[in-house]
Amino acid sequence: MKKLAEVLRDWEAVIGLEVHTELTTLETKMFCNCRLSHDDPPNTNVCPVCLGMPGALPVPNEKAIESIVMAGLATNCEIMRHSMFYRKHYFYPDMAKNFQTTQGPVAFCMHGHLDLEVSGAGAKERPDATVEKDADGGYVAPIRILRIHMEEDAAKMVHVGGEEGRITAATESLIDYNRCGTPLIELVTEPDLRTPEEARLFMEKLRQTFLTLGISDCSLESGSMRCDGNISLRRRGTTEFGTKTEMKNINSFKSLHDALEYEICRQAEVLEEGGIVYQETRHWEPSRRRTVVMRVKETADDYRLFPDPDLAPFDLTDEFIDRCRARIPELPDAKRDRYVADYGLKRADAAQLAGDPKVAAFFEEALEGVGEKNVPTLANVMVNLAPSYDALTVGQVRGVAGLLAEDALTFAQAREVLDAINGTDEDAVAYVDARGMRQSTDEGALGAIVDEVLGRCTDQVQQYRDGNKKVLGFLVGQCMKAAKGSGNPKAFNKMLAERLEG
Ligand code: ADP
Ligand code: MG
Ligand code: ZN
Image (cartoon, rainbow, N blue to C red; front, side, top):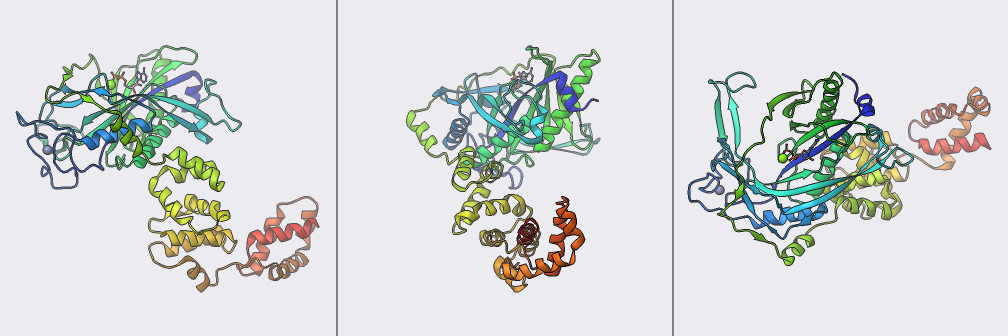
């Protein structure tokens, strides 16, 4: 198969995502008072409503409606004041009622959008001129959201025995209804995404937004956030959509990117060989890095969708919507812009810190008392060093950032210190001082070393003067050696350059 870059020169990929998010932070299920927890023993959080007993009456969870309205407001959707629940009928044991309660043509949230900032290597995936690119090839892609509707999750099924990956007569199927009735919001994008990287960024941004809203733990691994990727190709320059396939079983950002990449290349090969792409559901196999057919869609599914007579239509009031709006915290984009404006952080660093509410809270606590001019160093530590460790305290990170900012540590030493103190209650400064790691930037003490090295390395000095500026690195190394590692390389660098140029 051809490589993605080659395929995307001739073909335009058209991608739309359907994203399901369980509202895991709520205490109870969507239509009953059962405890919302997937960790309890199977079938312990159940009642007549979520087990679908005849005559049991559902009562909507108001907090779930608040959560979806917050999600809609945060993604620039219009909040529909009037909407209702529908029944979507199907038979499968994971839903004892034989229908899923969901929404009809009008969802709580309609017609929103998220703007993606695409930069770096990922931006190269989009070669076309339909977006305006900046000097570095980066661009902004506006992605429309068709709707976000409210529904309920089904029970969890586990199939054991029988043949690997297939259900046979020897298979036993187990059902855990604890998950049945979990409040679930489904977001559907318009087919506006054009590259696997854009799809990955969209999911990432959505996850950051929902995490910041606190409406879900948004775990792709555990399945509280799930995503189906719809993809078709069309020749560059044409406008008509091709036939799409839908990909399931995507449980990481990397899988989403890789599955779309594979599928784009596969469809291109089929089309270039004169074949046809069938409208089918495909399953991503991460271990074999390919998609396989799950089922072919021959006819439109008939779910006998109709308004649920047990649930009254909704009339959301302005007061309710205002209350939801007031509960929305500062969102990642606004936070990023504030970090750039207030602390002069690099945009990418600021975006990374602002994207995860836990990281942002840690950063904001750590920057208290660190001194304004040292905040970029703190950000640097948090973006580049801290993510490798899972148990650092705010004080430890603040301490290491302070030492780095005053050039008392090299970056490599900072890593060494974090390595040692991660998971302990040891103070970073105390650790460094106890081991005499603190580097000198004292011009007097370092000056003597610099003079000694320049006096000894006459060949390299001549090479430098002849224009080979690279030997500076060698000379810094000699100074470091002479100082037995206690001199600051940046200080040596500066002093050497001054003396050599002077
Ligand atoms: P279906 O009826 O098969 O579920 P929908 O019209 O509901 O299809 O769309 C589902 C998702 O597929 C949406 O995210 C939409 O943007 C996307 N989509 C629709 N048509 C195409 C297409 N031709 N190529 C790629 N994605 C598409
Ligand atoms: Mg659909
Ligand atoms: Zn229940």
